[in-house]
Amino acid sequence: MSLCRLTRLRARLPPCRRLSGDGGGRDAPPPEPLPSLLEPTHPADDRQWSDAALYPEGSRGRQSQARRSARPAVDPRHTSVLLFPGQGAQRIGMADRLLPFPHVADMFAEASDILGYDLLELCRRGPAPRLDRTEHAQPALLVTSLAAVERLRDERPRAVDSCMAAAGFSVGELAALTFSGALSFSAAVRLAHVRGQAMQLASELAPSGMMTVLCRPDARLGFACSLARRWCEEHGLEAPQCAVASFLFPQCKVVAGHVEALDFIAERAAEFGLRRCTRLRVSGAFHTPLMAPAAEPLRAALADTRISAPRVPVYSNVDGRQYRSAEHVRRRLVEQLTKPVKWEQTMHVLYERSPGVPFPDTYECGPGDTLTAILKKVNAKAADSCTSVEV
Image 1 (cartoon, rainbow, N blue to C red):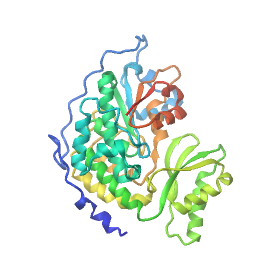
Image 2 (cartoon, rainbow, N blue to C red):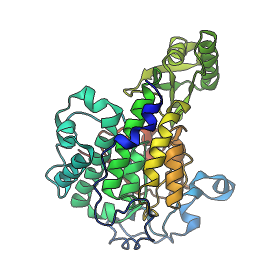
Image 3 (cartoon, rainbow, N blue to C red):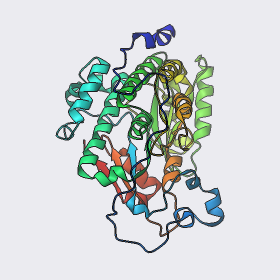
Image 4 (tube, rainbow, N blue to C red):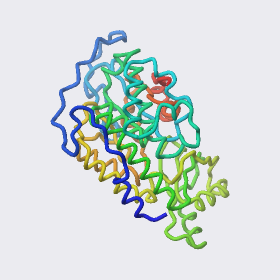
């Protein structure tokens, strides 16, 4: 397959069916502010919720990643955080439990018109090999995750109206940005379509993949990746890639690269202090330089997309910092393709706090409970108030 297929990708895509106000390429004016927080459901707390109470104290506080997060001066238990899963969470039957809720059927119909195929049928009945293809999995996860928000809005409206932060893993970031008002629904579906097709095509340029690695305390994962690249070069592979592509939780990372490099590490796992290596159900080495060919189609699609400043803080996979503007969104979403997902660091940004300070309610909006399980490894107390929205 030649690289020119990627450069022609944008011309092959169906036009975006825009919802009202979704003009292409022109950034929207500043949105109206979110409604004020609804009446709290937790018992009253007499302490004053200032920066001193909400952020870690002392020298540890000055160095804390938590300072990157925006925390309203209210009892954290009266706020919420929404998390959106990434590729690999998809499964046959997702969306079955969402159809009775308002707007969900219309959302799938709108997405199907944009994509040119029946997305709801694919989510509910597969077949699995087709759903698992990157070009299909990404729009499917986007729409299912946003439909999960509609279920949450119907069952627990306070959880949606009091949201003070959102984050999404990889393609889940598009769902987070849509929830925040930065993207319209139709624009997000089109971007997921472009992104999924571009990453699928980039994956087919070279045999590559990803694997989850559980490390011992004395693990030498960076050394393992370096040796794997060197071994591949010595065996005739040009410009081999092998690196950490996702930081999940302490002692757990995702490594991505050429299949030969992954095989090299898996076969010598014990030598590098690795407890277990598990291949992921994805088509390529996402969040590595092997995704560089996908960058230009996504950049072009973003340039033609109307983007607003997020109404709810959304935290980027690239560095765990808030998106500040439309141009910041455009830049970071392209960078995200080839840079590792700093999910563990983002969880520290959102949840690190002094002892005794309560946590917000967290909702995982999308199929599965992988992000809830990861949060438990990063911050068990924060995970105690985390709920997965069934799809």
